[in-house]
Structure formats: C-alpha cells, structure tokens
Length: 473
Image (cartoon, rainbow, N blue to C red):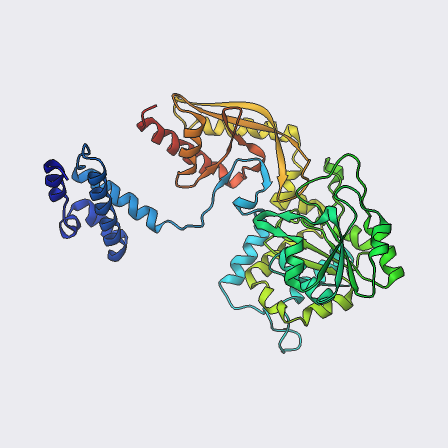
C-alpha cells in the first residue's frame, strides 16, 4: 500500500460521522436505522476496496458518498420480485411470470387475501368442505369432464396422475414424446419419481398404433400421450391420435392419459391460430385423463388442472401426495375468476390478457404502435428516436412452437449509445423494461406491452435516457 493510498484510507469517514450528515438524517427519517447503518457500512467497505484495488482512485466527496449510500439503501429496500414491462413479444414468457392475470382474477386475489374465506368450509351444510370444490364444477362445465382436480402446476398434475394410476407398473409412451421442458423437467424423470416404469415405443419421428399394441403386457397400467409443446417434428412423421389410442385402450382395458401441456379451453383457429385442440376435444376423443397448465394458454395463475373420468380423479383425491401438491387460496381464487370468464368466450377474449394479446390483428398492432410512439415522444428528449418496424411475435410458454404472429416493433435509438447499452439501461430502471435486440436494433414489441404499463414505460424510457446522457458515449 502506497503512502497516498494509506492517507486516503484514513480519510474515509467513520460510521458515526456519516450518520450526522444532513443528507443521511433525511434517510433516517424515511428508513429504519438498522437498514441505514447496513447501507453506510456497505458503501464504506466498497470505498476501501476500491482504493486498495486502484491506487489512482480518489476518495469521493461527501455529496457523492451520500448519494452512494442512498442508492445502496434503495437497492436493499426494493423487492426482489417486482413488476417489469414485457416488450419482448413473447406472450407467455416463462422468465417474466408467464400469463398476466385478468382484472377479475386480480380482484379475486385481493378480496380473499385480506379476509377470512370459506376455503375448506361448506356454507350450505356448515361442515368442513374441500378447497377443490371451488373450481371443479367450472372445469367440468368448460371441458365436459366427469370430474376434475387442481394442483400447483402441470408437473405436479402429471406426477400425481402417474403415481395414482401406474405406480409400480408399466406406462407406454412414444419415443418422440419423451419431452424436456424448461427447468430440465423430463418425462422419463417424472415417471421415475412417480414409481411408474417407462416403456418406449416407436421412433423419434414415427410411431404407429401397432407399436403400442405389441408393447401391451399384463404389467401395462397406462397409455400416455404427451403434447410436444415446445418443439415440432416435421417431415417424414407419424403419430397416433388420441382417438386411435383411446380405441386401443378400450379394447385392451387400459386407461389413456394425455399431458396436454399448455392446455387450451377455446378454439383459436378463427383468429389464425390453429393446430391446438381444446381440452374438451381431447376428452371427447376418448382420453380418460387430461392434465394441463393454468398459466399458459388458459391465461390464469400457475396451476395444474386434471380433468377426466370420475374413478381416476377420485382416486387422485385420496392420494397422500395431493396435500403436498395442493394449491393455495390465492391461486384458487384467481383460477376460479379466470374460469368464470370462459363461460362467455367473447368476454374471455377481451378480459384475459393472454387471449387478447394472442388474437390482436396486424392492423390493431400498427395502430397501437402509433399511439404508443406519440405518447412516448412527449416525455423523451431529442436524443431519443423511435422508429416503427414490421416484425413477428411468438406465443411462448411451450405453446405453438412454429407460430409466428405478425406484429409492429418500436426501435429505440439513443444518440451515441449502442443497443446493448440501451438494453442495460432500461433493464435497470425503477420499473425494468425488457425488450429484445435483433439485427443490432433494440426493439419493443407492442403486442406484449399492457395498457397499464404505458405510463410506466414512458417514465422508464425517460429515466434510462437521462442516465445514458450522463455516461460517456
């Protein structure tokens, strides 16, 4: 350590001295003293380390140290889980919380969270009830199922169904359907955990009904079909339909289960989105049990829905695993509110954000982009330029892997700064904005920017541009 560094180290103020600064007194008026003390000590340690690592460094003045402490305190008190503006164009974005909820679902959560509720109390009989009753009737009504059950996600639904229907016995699955989805969730691993024994049939690209037929033995408990949600096999391919598999299951006395993945309750083909059967269509084709997600195409909270024949659902309700996998009251409230919207398909399309975003037309999006650009320009300096481009959005969430939806993109240009710098600046604003970089352009897709996010987006862009203006280009 050089003499100059040693002298600067001595000049670093003590904690009690910093506490007496007027700027810090203001922080003490707004934040608990222990939090302020931690922020002060953190910044002072950083200053020492900076001086030791770089002998050319200089000690900041009082105002700068106070600003660093304020920034550290703000960072410490800001929630880790926070809202962001989704400008990526991925509608069901797994990393950004998947489906935003409808206003009705949000209101249901607020009502239930702030009061006691009849979560497991039957108001008609005055006796203990079951939490699943709040949504079972709705699921049956919307899908045509005999019975239904909900757990905390679709992976849990699959494990519970397999554990109940096939533990210790064989389950036949096409080799082309042994999928892996996000978070290393693999069908073979899930089956192993459930206690079922995997029997692979067919090949990666072609599986026929005879492959299932010759694999059936006395140990076979279940025929399982898995929706290839996040990829598509194209070219020389063949797969067995749910109807054909169900016919084989009935002839052999073996139940058929379908992991539908995203799970769709509404036919979206009139809106140019085809190739995704609804849950009711799967059940009508003969599937005995269908599992699907609540927070993907359904547009609700994280949940795993199980719909099908009563004998299998009732057995799952008695399984010891169910208690570990059950949904909490907030998720149940929001799921019930979301399902109620599906009683009127026209209302669901308008009220459920995921459906609304997926079905917006190219013309709607172009007009929306014009409105957004005009609104943003009012609060941005001349150094920021907004340029419209044609582009494509995606469904996301393991849904429609080949689907590309025409959209309008807004390119954000800040004079003297690269797209990477703009991306980083917007990601670090008070309310982060998440966009995408494509062909050396920083882009925001208007399809996934919610109406309620427009004031926030304007503030975040202004904040980011002001921060970039202080940096050297």
